[in-house]
Image (cartoon, rainbow, N blue to C red):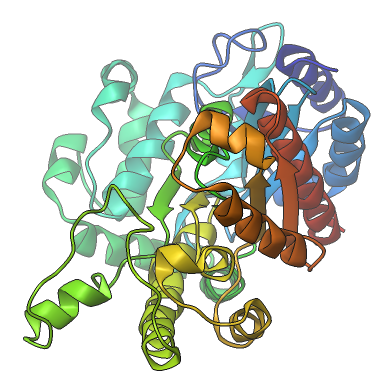
Length: 439
């Protein structure tokens, strides 16, 4: 398998020979040490389009997969990675920027950045003034301060004539000190007026294209992905989830959300009933999730309706808002757990009915992992359930495992093997999806 360093050497070697590009920042350790979550590359839009298919081919030839793909108005993002049979994972994120812009309003073009690019023997990169202007112009336009971690870049660039000239041109400020004091609301109209004078038709197209890609990404949530884990207590869910998050941490360490069972927009039904005065006592012995007695059909339907509202609204607020960009949502359990483990949720309804209900009303996660093991293995790990309870859950897992969107994973040996199987499966499926979008 091609290592990350080898993968980067192949891709940058190809780009060096075929297109005009430059890395914006954090390139000093490449290819052996990537000290950043992503690699920011400035490139002309038409150059990227010519380059795209060959980059896909090179990625596949290296045995890597395109895990997430974001297409916005100002950049294209690829998160590439591979996972071997032992679960060892390497990942790299490429951000291909076409300019520095905000909401379709251009602040600095690719041509301006590339005019003074330099070569360090491995890749082309942007000089200090360009590195500073990219971050500074964008952050000031959205009302944010220039990041403190780039202070050295600022100190090296802020008094350069080219920097002061560009800030005056875009924002109408005579100095960086003056620009620092302005709000984003006051700077955006200046940038808008600058674009209207210099490139009016391109400005109109830029704003339309921004709206098109933003709305499309939000509605379709095509970029990130969501994954849920269901299985009996003792199947190793917590260990596997923690290990999986550790494996994808180089890119998704700060770009993931973790939830337990449901989005939790609303409290537990018992707590809500207690607060409303309907119920006097609440059982808060959460260490024993299977402590509750069996409920009747009416009680089960009430619980199902209540939790379904949480899943439906919570999905659009807490899941879709994250997966519209290059981020990951992980659920320890999800609605699938209601189907498989009725004792935990106290919703005693037919698995077939619950599965049909899910298909009709509950938003689906991209991947639903049914993690389990044999009764003897589970009982050796954790005695939360008896053998009959484990068999009951495993029977429902077997019912679901051949349904679309579900994957049964046996965690009999080591969690490394289970994580390897899960990541290989997810990477393969994401790659297939992104190849269709890249055509």
